[in-house]
Amino acid sequence: METRRVEFGELADGRRVPAVELANGNGMSVCVIALGAAIQSLKVPDRNGRVADVVLGYDDARQYLQRPQYFGVTVGRYANRIAGGRFVLDGWPYRLERNDGPNHLHGGASGFDRALWKIESVSDGPQAKVVLRHFSPDGEGGYPGALDVTATYSLDEANTLTVEYRATTTRPTIVNLTNHSYFNLTGDAGNTDVMDHRLTLFADAFTPVDEMLIPTGERRSVAGTPFDFREPRAVGERIRDGSDEQLRIGRGYDHNFIVNGPPGVLRPAARLEDPHSGRVLELLATAPGLQLYSGNFLDGTTVGKSGRIYRQGDGLCLEPQAFPDSPNRPEFPSCRLDPGEEYVSTIVYRFSITAG
Ligand code: GLA
Image (tube, rainbow, N blue to C red; front, side, top):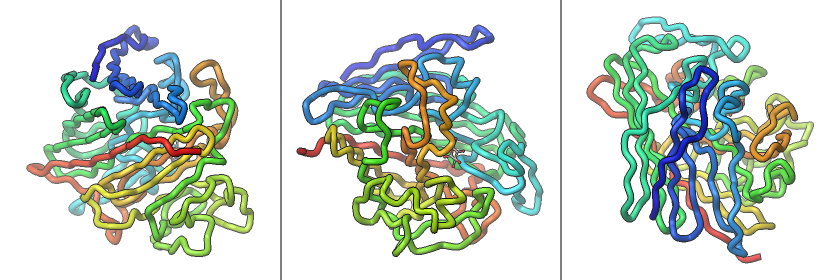
């Protein structure tokens, strides 16, 4: 295992962005940048041993702030949407920024994706590991409580990347952290899209949304719908089914799936396979839900790594998270965090290959 501290570049205001590369003996490596505690690159071998980058992103640090598509970043304090940018906790009303029409999305302007995290420690051993830390003061972005957050990335020799989020608060609050990587297992994003990738979701139900992508409160069975990925299906097979109201609203997939099994326990959430390269990603998580987002807002105006234009469907996000708008939905699993407790959320990305 190997770890290396590098410089990723500099922001418009002159702040430097340090980064850490974790690498194992099988050719797999990940570059984590302090800006947004983001996965900037993730290099994985295919069935012929050819190593390529399987996530979308930027080459230049400034672009992460200029055109936030949330490529690979840590999203917080609350990933996804909160209706009307408001919620009530213990009888107290709180107002958050409305940065997605009338709603709050991904923590707003003080979101953790825009923060320069502190690289707290880097270590080798059976795992290559980096710990990043971020402190968000009481009231920042309208959220109650000072939040002390760590994001730990570790890579092992079995080609498993584990991300663990931990947070504590000084006042009762809400927390929902996730990683927003866009995967393209061809390793050729910007030339080849992900519509052929075969996706399995360990979810019998999902939460339908209204026109503003806020859950209606319904839990709907995936049976007989384009949301049924209980058996492997090509991502693009039913994505253009215009008879499906939910696909029309999302312009594709932009929906929260209810992961089977108890939240808080690490369990399979998704499996993604690229039949061409043979790369396979198995995703396990402790969060109650998984947002499936098919890059619908990539409209050809974003120039990503290697100078390629990203368009709809060029990457697929699999974001383990609390259900969207949970703070306003007592019937959804709670995203509440109290002083004296610790928020812990784990995501495991396990890479392997399948024969052709
Ligand atoms: C999430 C949301 C999408 C979109 C992306 C960022 O996945 O669900 O609607 O906002 O983030 O572009």
